[in-house]
Length: 219
Image (cartoon, rainbow, N blue to C red; front, side, top):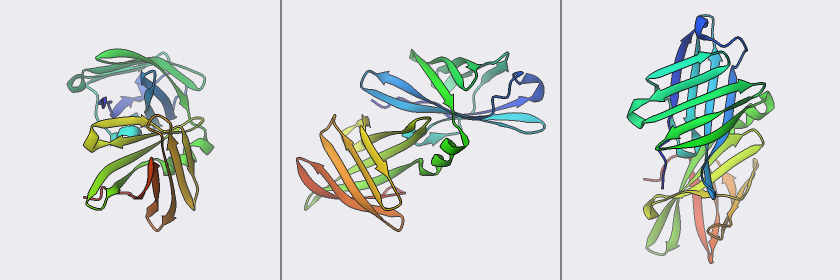
C-alpha cells in the first residue's frame, strides 16, 4: 500500500528561528511496517530575511507541498497539512531531529543531518523507470526509487501494475559503470551497465529477463 507522505515548503521570519542553527539536509526512515520503510527528508535553508524548509519523500518521487500551520521555536519544529490530514512534531538535538509523524497513525522517526560528504550523494537520488520484458508480447513496468540517508541509501522497488509499492531492496550498488540491486522479499536481483542516460541489464526472478532503466517513464 502506498502511503501519501507530504512534501513541505515552509517560510519563517528570522524571529521564528530556533536559537541554534538547524539549517541543512535532514533524513530519516519512516517505518510503515516491520518489513517496509520510506525516507522522510527535511531541507532547511537560511537567508537574511527568512528560513525555507523543504520536506520530501524521495522514495515516492514527490516534493514541495506547503503546510497550513507551522512553528519553529525553542529547538522544536511542528507543522500540519490539512488536505493530507498529516502533522509532525519534533525536537532538534545536536545533529538529530526526533519526533512523531502522524497520518492516520503515529510514526516515531529520527532524522539525521547530512554531512557535506553525505549531501554530495544527493545527485544519485532519483526514480528510474523501466519495462520488464516478461514475455515476447508482455511488459511489466517497474520503478526503482533511490533515496539518500545518513549511512548510505534506502532503495525500494515499485510494480505499479501489480499495485505493489515500497518493496525493500536489501543489496544496492551504484558506480559510474554499473547498477546492481537485490530484494530478498521477492527473490529478485538486477545487474546493468550505464549507457548514456539509461542502464541496460538483466532482471532475474526465477528466470532472466531484459530490463532497461531510464530517467523518465517509458510511456
